[in-house]
Image (cartoon, rainbow, N blue to C red):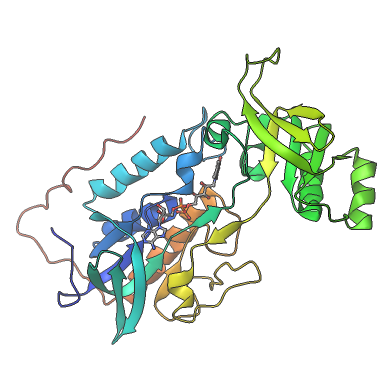
Length: 332
Ligand SMILES: Cc1cc2nc3c(=O)[nH]c(=O)nc-3n(C[C@H](O)[C@H](O)[C@H](O)COP(=O)(O)OP(=O)(O)OC[C@H]3O[C@@H](n4cnc5c(N)ncnc54)[C@H](O)[C@@H]3O)c2cc1C
């Protein structure tokens, strides 16, 4: 079935914008509800940065982010989900639904929309950043992977108060935690005291930071070398930048959807934004930025949408219906 629709074509039941863990889960659910949907995806899921996730349910030995995305895509496509590469630039309310327009001019009309466009991390100026993330010398999510950094020499880099708060969080995992300030601002005195009490080192502002693979020096592990103004350097095994991220909400806010102080979308218990018919799932929603959460959001949104759509009773068939085509083989 070709689900691609122009604005003149019949309505989709639901357009899903974003094909990361949230969007792909929503697609699998809605296809299994026999709904007419389409996913538009710009192809830059945050999950592609994950070297190995160890907290993703069902993967006791961990899973690489791109492997997880491939498997979720395969699962959604196994039920016939059409996935179009593209970037939705505009969403308009029209009649009983929405019209979405992609940057290349493609258009789709849908009764409901699930926005699953994620967030984009603000990255530090660090030489060799991509290799550092791939090798886990730079980590972006302490809730995801601080366990793997247990007992490492850890630095947290960001606005000083944020850096100290995260450093205190990371003390659960290592006795060697330092806070690296983004600039020369003084820390909140109470936080500074908590840092001293917890044995968190407050460092000067770094001048440069660079990734240093294992073996380039005597160190057995990969690391990040931080250079300070006085010429001294310190090597950390793990660096967590805490520079925040930008929720990809522009399409929703242009329609009046409300956000919290962190510029992330506010949703109700069914994942609906303050715009009727527009649902949101995953990192761009005000909640923990985690795969398990994104998947949970998506299943709630997809089920709520199915229940709001007109009933799609199955026709009686003369012969037993065949099993759905190309279903993926269950994993063992
Ligand atoms: C280094 C790193 C390690 C991590 N480790 C873990 C971990 O171990 N465990 C864990 O639970 N989480 C981890 N995370 C977080 C996890 O990756 C995210 O929570 C998850 O990817 C969120 O899924 P999502 O579908 O909301 O957003 P994303 O995965 O970011 O997907 C959003 C998709 O929407 C697309 N998109 C954006 N705008 C548009 C548009 N206008 N039109 C069309 N498409 C659009 C993007 O291109 C992207 O493909 C990690 C993140 C990072 C960066």
